[in-house]
Length: 460
Image (spheres, rainbow, N blue to C red):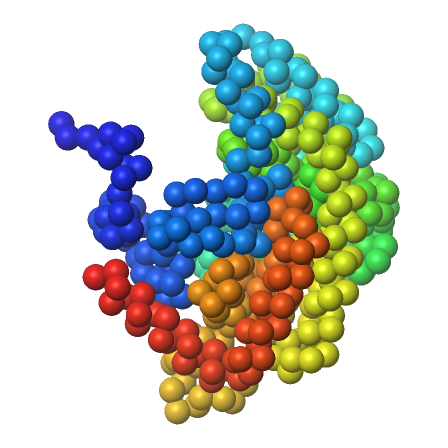
């Protein structure tokens, strides 16, 4: 049997990486990335920056979709993981108890709002959501789970059933029964649905990420809490992307001083070094779901809560608190939003700039009737308007950004929370320069087509 050694894989050139992905991974993913010359490899990363295989330096304003709140390879988190290896302790032992799980669970109970206390550890955000949905259903005893339009909770079956874009749902129907959706930010719609008394849980993001960085109206989360209490419905707050300081508070629900019955955590809980996630519930919910010897094994996992995961998380949370990362995000977020707002008035292509902390969306106006003679190209380009601007930011200004999954007309700025004012200024200037140079949808489309052709031919 033939194998590839670690040393050989690390030595792959860009062409070998692309071809192997085509042959052995998701076959069309390299072509998808090549549309905007995103099919690069980045063998080196540190803090806010990464370097491609040719040595070109890029600033990362995507931040692992909220996973890299401390940047790439944060020293404190790396040191914590190395300490576990050096100690040669058990990394994975599900038939016993873990001191690191015990310490991390206590920490999470201390830093999360309200009465949240009991934690279940998982490996990915979607797994945390699956566990939260199961917990809510068994604890409530009621079948219906309400979510919001344009929501994103993951792409496993339960998480996808609660998510909000038909493009990703329709090919897999029928999805799980008992899931319904209402408009995000509409408390009246929520109350109207809860009046039927068959709803067990309401799940929502405190700020919609993939929906386009959509902020709820002021007071919405407070009303959600009040309505869930009134109708005896469990509230699940999905803080996978918004947690650990991203929005200027440790968790986004804290902006309204409210707490859910269940909270999902992920992405930056592992400090950007290990895949990790969790959900945490109140004692009342946990007792109803798992509070007996008979029920103790109703929800289990193999890899959640490994020693390396817990060590990374403990080190990351210590850094978030001791360096006051949430306040840094609040201050720098307000600073860069004010700068970006000047571009909103300057460039006609910008429809709206919105965000909180360092979770920021820049929505572009769709072209409408432009390019009717090449309707298919117009349709593709319009669907990927945010991606086209991201492509220009990457290829012309060496700044990594991306669009939001459910609203591709929105480009997100989601840098590590260690970003400096100088780096924020550079990103604003790059966006200003990009939109000044490419003032029209046609110009963006032509540039994207040139990039696509160049990338496709160079990767052959």
